[in-house]
Length: 402
Image (cartoon, rainbow, N blue to C red; front, side, top):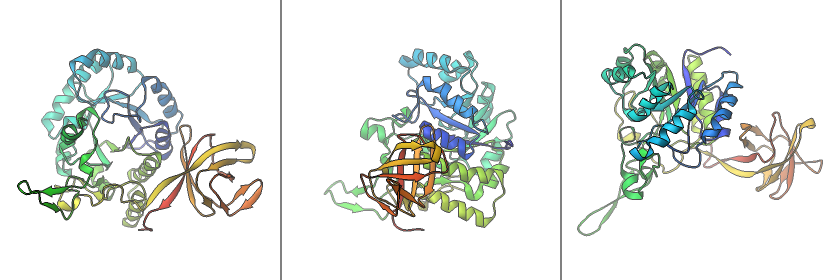
């Protein structure tokens, strides 16, 4: 596999997302564990999973690097646990993404390469130099920088630069938000953000309680970042690593985003191809797209107009693979919904990642059918290996094609 000049980093919140990222062409994956992660919750891995993660990545053609995120605030009561963790992962990951100086000190102690997280808000050359002298190999720059500012920081020699190119944007400066803490006692800086910024709000007048509905009542909800239209400018700005946000996103999102940006990093795209790839990105979860701070400070138009996704497409659970007949390449799905010829479906499994097909023919009890009902077992011939109990989803259209 030819090595790219640029590193494409993909989020891995599950084994299925990890495999989807590898198959789609990621040069590196980043993931969290069940502690010290900015994405706290059930989607994280255990320390015992790391060797399996490394094995999966080493088996892929690009042999993606493995990066562990330990980027929350750390308290004194957690230092022993932190040291035990870093000692256990030493030699098993390619780098740790962090910003707390206690984590940095332990990385130095156990000789673990480390990158500085965007949580450190590196926004100037002096900060970059400081972390380089501490031994950092890479800095994930603050998200609030313009292309011009990134070019200036790139003058620091011996320190790789990484930036986010796609995914959710925080309305606060690199996650410095206390709304979730105040309203739900869930700290964003401890990886527990409840995302109250994504919701609709009404203004209430204090004296008499009169309420006003704002024209756009999603006053704190930023559109997603999408750097695809100006990816060439980022390449020229001195960036080494291009990072896709989304450890809480499903494997279909990860697969799509990685495929799009893999093509963009490996080729100089025509305007027509950029439009085609933008449509591909719009087909998975998004809250509308923005250029973030790269081309100038965000405007009111960079606030989202939806509480959930703007995508016309969404997935609906169809069933699970009940039986496999590998010799004839047939899988039997036990349906939890109706299915008909021409519909698009996706298979998701921790050994498969995600694979999609458009249904061209199917059988029930060896007889070809055009429709199958909920509760029936339907056989499909597949062009890829699938696994028993794989989840199957139908790709549905919400409002019609864009």
